[in-house]
Image 1 (cartoon, rainbow, N blue to C red):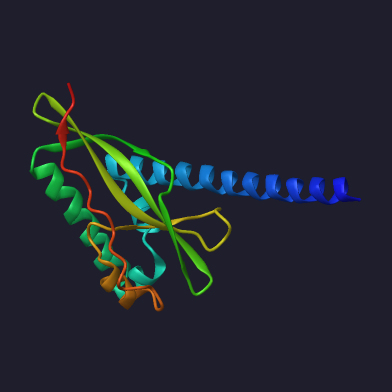
Image 2 (cartoon, rainbow, N blue to C red):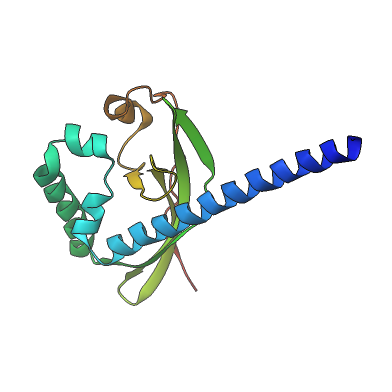
Length: 170
């Protein structure tokens, strides 16, 4: 009987680890799609990926569309070309009214002139359908205090990590 209980506990633990790994894989895949949309300036994809509360409370679809386009043009006009993004494993998670938000670090590679640079940045990702669809929030654009306005119950005292400055790639 003792062996059965130990086996049962180990099996349940393995199932839970497997489920978490599956969710992490879905999250990284979705984050990489989001980053690719930024690289490709895919405004429609990016608009679909905006957190629904930000879309609704932030002025609606047309206003957010203009904001996304403005951000993309700002980078293009500065001479910076994002060439790739790569999602890393989520580093933190926050539970807000039954929904989990994941802080996802990612590495950008960008080109300026003939030189390439790398930087680590962060997005906050959320799925309300077990990882089938995701929304993203750029934490360099929103503080936790700002997010508490859009997401009731969000802990406004959270301090998100700062992204790293771009460093030359040899």
